[in-house]
Each structure stands twice: as C-alpha cells, then as structure tokens.
Amino acid sequence: MSITAKEAEIIEEMDLFGDWQEKFGYVIDHGKALPAMEDALRVDENIVHGCQNKVYIVSAFDGTLVHYTADSEAQIPRGLLSMLIRVFENEKPEDILTADLQFIDKAGIRDNLSMQRSNGLEAMIRRMKMEAAKYIKN
Amino acid sequence: MSSSLFDVALIRKDFPILHQEVNGSPLVYFDNGATSQKPQQVIDAMVKYYSTYNANIHRGVHHLSQVATSAYEQAREEVRAFLNARKTEEIIFTRGTTEGINLVAQSWGRNYLKPGDEIVVTAMEHHANIVPWQLVCEQTGAILKVIPMDQNGELILEEAEKLIGLRTRMVSIIHVSNALGTINPVRQILEMARKSGAMTLIDGAQAVPHFSVDVQELDCDFYVFSAHKILGPTGVGILYGKQQLLDQLPPWQGGGDMIRTVTFEKTTYNDSPLKFEAGTPNISGVIVMAEGIRYWNALDHAAVQEHEQHLLTYATGRLKEINGLKIIGEAREKVAVISFIIEGLHPYDIGFILDKKGIALRTGHHCAQPVMEFFGIPGTLRASFSFYNTTTEIDHMVDALLVAQRMLQ
Image (cartoon, rainbow over all chains, first blue to last red; front, side, top):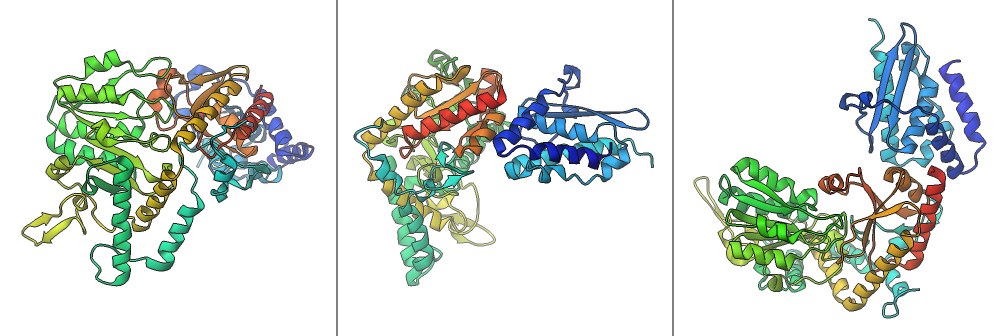
C-alpha cells in the first residue's frame, strides 16, 4: 500500500470521531499498539531534538524498504509516532523522502496541537526522512 | 465555598483576560508562578504612558521628558516603599530577576571572588540562581556549594550550618521555591551567613506575589524579583542592594545614563542606581510596574493570604482524591503552589488534555532540573494560584484531571 493510501485510511478512520477527545483517544490507542523500544536503543544519538519530551527514532534498511522503531516517554507523542510509522514503514527511502504528508492536517490532528507541539511533530517527520535519506545511493 | 473576607468575584472584574473561553471552556489560569495576569489599571497605565507622556528620561529638558522622568523616579520610590528599603538609591531597575542575579554575580563576584571562595545556594534553586554563579565560579575559581533538601521539599538546616563557614563569601538563596512552593526559612539562613561574614542575596521572584517582604527586617544584602510576576509587565526586574555595597561595586554594563563624564582617556561613573542602569531603560515598563504595586498595596493582604491558603488547602485535598496522584513538595510552609504527578502518566500528556479543557498549568521541570533529579522524575504539573483564583476553578481542574486519567489509562 502506498504512503498516500495509508494516509487515506487514517483520515477515514479519524473522520469517525467527532471531537478532539475522541480523536486523541484514537491517537493514544495507536501509541498503545507500538512495541516498547529496547533500552539499548534509548541513547542520546537516537533522541529527536525539538520535542518537549524524550522521543527516540531508529531505522533499519533491508536493501529495498525502510523499517522504523520509535518510542517516547509520553503517550500522545507515542501515538503520533505510531501513526507516522504506520505510514512510512515498509516504504522505499525515495518515497519517504519525497512524501508530502497530508493526514496530519486532514485528520484534524494539527488543529488540536499547540505550535510547540506541532513543531515537535515536524521534528519527528524530519528525523524519519533523514533516516530514509541515509539509504539512498548517490 | 470561598473565603468570606475576600470578594473574589469583584477582584476578577479587574482582570479582563480571565473572562474568555479557551478551546471552548472558560479559561482557568493556574500558571501564575510563570507570570501573573494584569489588572485593567495596569493595562490603562501602559496606554496612558504611550498616549500622553512617552519620552526618554533623565536628559531631556522638555515637558514630556520631565513628566516621564518624574513618573520613572516615582516608580523607584514606590518600589522602595514596597520593599521597605532605606533609600531609593538602593533600588536598581533590571530586565528581571535573572538579570539582577547576573549583575551581582558579575559586578560583585567577578571582582571580589578568589579561587577557593565558596558560594552557597540551595538544592531548590531556579536555574537563574545557579548558572550565573557557575559562570562566575569558572571565571574566578570559586566553588559552588548546595544546601540539600529532604523528601518534603524542605531545606536541611543542620546541613546549611555545616556548609556556611569561613570560606563562604556569598549565600544566594531562593525565598520561595517555584517548583515546590516551599517558603524557605531565609531568616535563619541569613543569620548563619551574617555570622560567617558572607554576603547574601535572596531570589524573591516567587515570594513577593504572595506576601509582604521587608528588606530592612530581613537584613539581606541583595533582594531580586520580577515585575511581571506581581501584576506588572514583562521585561522589568528589581535589584535591591544596600547602598554602601552598591557604592563600592563597579558598573556591570557600560553606556548611556551610567556615566558622569566620558572622554577617550577616562570615563567617570554615575552614582547608584544610575551606575547600574546603562542605556535607555524600560521606561514604560517601570512606570506601569508601579501601577501594579499600587494595585497590590490597595489589597487587604491578610485577606489575600487567607484566601490563597484556603485555595492551597482546598486544592491539596481535592487533588489527593485522585488515584495515583502524588504531590511533590509538602513543606509545612508553602505558598499556593502545588506540583504533582500522576503515577504512570506523563505530565506532558496530562498538560495537553488540560489545555484542551481551557486549563493553563505548567508542565515540565520548571527551570529547576536539579529539583526534578532529586525526586527522580522528569517533570511535574504545577498549579500555581493567585488571589484572583477560585475553588470552582480548582473543581474544573480536578474534573479535567479525571478526564485525562480516563483517556490515558
């Protein structure tokens, strides 16, 4: 499934919820499905700077597709990470790098984030793209 | 239920910002420790200044400059009376508490400290009373010592006795902890400092919004606070210093207003306080700050304290009804500030949900990372109350916390 198709799925699911409480309940539930990161990966170089709390992102490459592991000590960022992984997991590095994500705005997530938190979310996306860029051969 | 002596509803009418909705709910402003809201009188004073007598001060012979200079110097007198300092010359206007501490650290510390000299702070300092001293320690070879606290968030005075000694040159302590609300026994610590011949500085940023301070009675050498935490504008701070000390200290920053004569060969300096106020100061801010102090002076302080203590007791009781909620800092003497965590939940997530309910609380380390490290937590939620807050608002906060708990567990 393409990045755009996965985004469309999320937008459709989030559309079922009326208010922020339901929408973010869903974001939090996403986070609960994210496996905890092993302690060995919770090191400084995997920290995403620009987030108000500690967020870790690690990637791997199987020669064709990128795989992500991520975690946060807080549940809302964890839910957002889980949604980003759902979109970017098993995609080609080129597709991740060029993706113009729509679901954050269209699913009504950004509307409910303060500017600082929105910046944190952008920092997560930037880091995931930078990870993908590592696997692109010049 | 609210305290009978104090008409909160009437007081709230003076604060226009409180009457609005945030995210569809009435604003509950519990971030007073970060900055207080401003009464209409203060807002009007700002408008009046810029509408009728904005001018640069001290050097103009024209009418507007004289009016502005007179209001600026009247503000200094207002602050002198507020702190009960002996003289207006002892009141220096700065940008804030942080700048006041940096001024003392650089003007006094850098010139008088020697390698091995000791500066004593407490374990519950705001970063503003740690980092300026660390900088001057790096510059002079002085050493920073820390009075420890216990699990209730109270300083351990026996340890302070041991730390403050012949090598101590400065004891710089926080009057009221911004992270915990603890009112520190500053009189006892000042007494220890005086016995050892050390200088003393009190960071009163979180004290002056809650109770009256008398610098002569305290007999400290320096006292600092910020206008914006006590009804005034941001960007203005006060540094009180004993005149004989200020006279001896060299200027910190150079520029206009702080000089007597300037030639390329030699410059002579003005007397305190102007010696420490280089450049055009925050004229409007200083004048408007005085209006905030006048507002504060007109309040019944005994009633304010009773009301705030009632808010503290009420909130403490209501918060303890929440399963897994732990209050961080349960000192016997506290201002109306409560730091807390809820087991298993991150303050960030709770703060997010509270904000969606229109409740403004602080989440994080509150610029006091060593305090968080001591309690082994990444941060807390902090509700800091002012005299214009109500028990109904506390009920809203508790309801919102229960929603957060349901969503997150």
